[in-house]
Image (tube, rainbow, N blue to C red; front, top):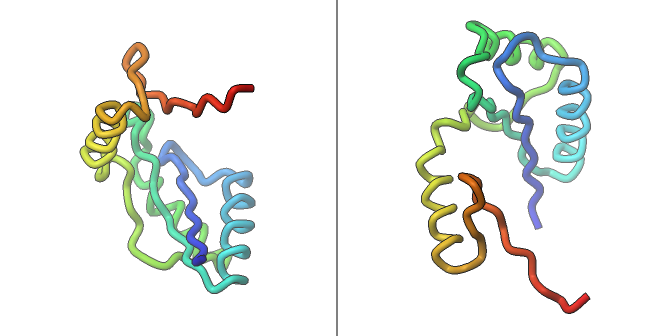
Length: 111
């Protein structure tokens, strides 16, 4: 099985040390196993987005010697695909809608 990890910071300001630590652990895990490490920006909270924060996040990671294996991606770029998958899961009964959220049905194992 191939390893694929990602970091998904929000572009709401400076990169937090806790986010760096998490990405470093993921990066070490992936690199140690010949896997991929991805950077995806969690830009779904557009009202709090700070200009230049994506560039700052990328610069900070590079300064620390942490790299990633493809172009930086953005969560909102995949919104339509996520909505399609949510509709598919609801249609097949694997998920259900609950006050605007789509929730996964857990298997009933009898316990």
